[in-house]
Length: 208
Length: 208
DNA sequence: AAAAAAATTAAATGTCTGTTTAAAATTAAT
DNA sequence: ATTAATTTTAAACAGACATTTAATTTTTTT
Image 1: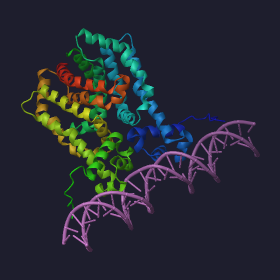
Image 2: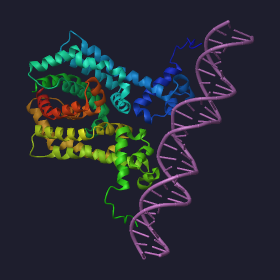
Image 3: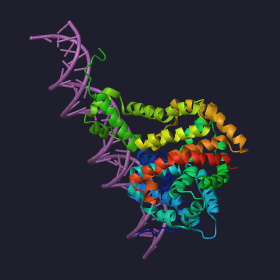
Image 4: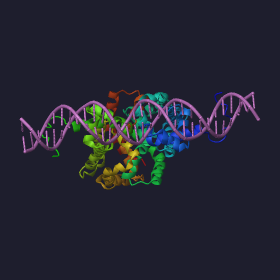
C-alpha cells in the first residue's frame, strides 16, 4: 500500500526533487529559495514537492541533515585513528576537507548561515564535541603543546586548523576580487594549501 | 522645502529605522527579514519605512554599504603604514578586527552571505585589492617570504591571516557546541588570540 | 482485462509580504 | 491665526508564496 513501486531503475522523481533542493538551498539558502525554483529545477509540478516531502521545511531539514553529516562525518574517522601521528591527522584533515569543499564550495557558508538562523538543528553534530575533546587527536594535541611548553588553549589550535582549511571557501567572493583570482587559480591554490597546512600547523605548535 | 526640521535633538525616526534595520538584517539576512520586523523593532508604522527609504532593498543597500566600509575601511590604514614592521601590522590587524567582531559578531557571516547572493555589491571594496597587492604590507610580506626562501604564494598568507582572525566568528555556533564554550569563554579566547596571531603568523612565514 | 493504487497535473486557497493610498495629526511658515 | 508642508497612521492593494484539492493519467495488482 505504501511503496510497492519497485521498478525505479533510473533516477526517481523523489530523488530529482531532492537534488534540485540541494542545489537551490545550497546556492541561495532557505529563506531566499522558492519551492517554485526547486520544482522548475527538478522539472516537476509544485504539488509533487508536497506530495513527496510534505513541506518546504521538511525537505530542507533532510538536506541540512545530510550536509551536516557530510561535514562532520569523516572528521570522526580521521581524528580517532590510533596509528597516525598528529601531523598526519592534520594532513588527512586538509586533504579530505579541501577536496570536499572544492566539490561543494557553497557547503560551509550554507551550514554556517542556516545554523545562525536555527542553532537547534545542530543536534546531529554533538558527536563532534567528543571528537574534539576526547579523541586520540585531542590527546596528541595536548601532548605536543606540553612538549613545546606552549600554554595556548588547544581549542585555539582547533579553531585555527578549521579556519585555515574552510575560511577561503567562506570568503571566496571577497578573496577572488581582492586577489584578482580566477576559478582555476583559486582551485590551484587550494591544492597547494593541502601541503601548506600541515607545515603551518607544525610551526604554530612550536610558536610560544 | 526639503528638510527644515532643525530640532532633531534626540534620535530621529529615520535613524531609529536604520538602527532597527541594521539589527534585523545582520541577525537574519536580507531574505529572512520582514519589513514588519524592522518596523516593530523601530516602533514605527510600516509605511514610514518606505516614506524615508523608498524600499526594503534601498534600506538594505545603505546598511550593506556601511558594513562593507566598516569591514574594509581600517584595513587600508593599517596595511599602508610606512613605519610599522610586518608583524606589527599583523598585530594591529588582529587587534582591530577582533575588537570589531567582538562588538559585532554577526558582521562577517552577514557580509559573506549577502555577498554570495549578489556579488556585484562588492564594488565599494575594490579598493582593498590594491591594499592587498600593492601596499607596504604586500611588499614586506613578499620580502619576508623571500628572505626565508619560502616559495608560498603571498595570497596564501593573506587568506590565512584573515581566516585566523575572522573564522572563529563565522563558525561560532558550531565552535560553541563542539568546544562547550560559553560566551564569556569565547570572548576571552578571542582576546588571547590577539596575542597568538602575530606569533603564529611569524612562525608560518618561516615554515618552508 | 478490470480494479486498485500511486503518481502527476491544473487550479484554487489562504496567508504573507512589500508597497501604496488617502486621510489625520503634527510641525513649520506666513 | 491661517496656511502650507511635513510626518504619521490605518487601511487597502496587488503580487508572491507555500500548501491543498480534486480530477486525470499512469502504473501495479488481481
